Image (cartoon, rainbow, N blue to C red; front, side):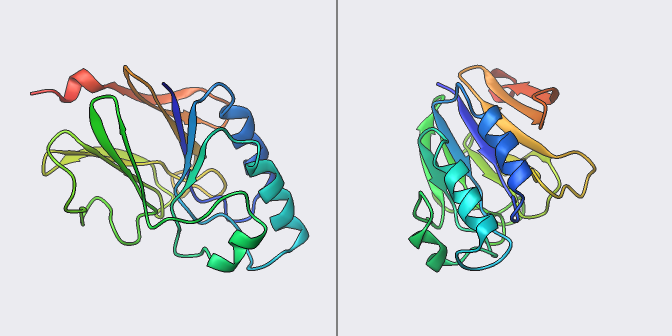
Length: 176
């Protein structure tokens, strides 16, 4: 089982093309919001929607810059969050403007994962017994490197948009 996690496209067709390439071989793709730059059926948005339709098992958490009207031409429906049970953990994916490293959803238990975007800065920490991951941004990183996360049975890997590992951790490193 492999999951690819991306966030904060903000209307970049080029970043979306790279995402599609990076997600090949993944079983599930989670997008943590802020997809389009403008509301509505612009040429740019339609191309991004076409590209997103190629992603395997796409799940989307709505960002603070996403509009439900965009679902009319998009290959997904927005959710407040995406919840998966994988790797013997509950994985909670969200955009980050509601739940994040400082405000946790009440449904998670020690050892579970909250993964978000929103700040455009990738990061990893443990807080209140939760593994907190900020995926960063694929189009406009504030920390200098566009990034995404791959998760598998062994652990998680922050990668740049060329697929190079920036940082990784094994799930067992978090076990008590």
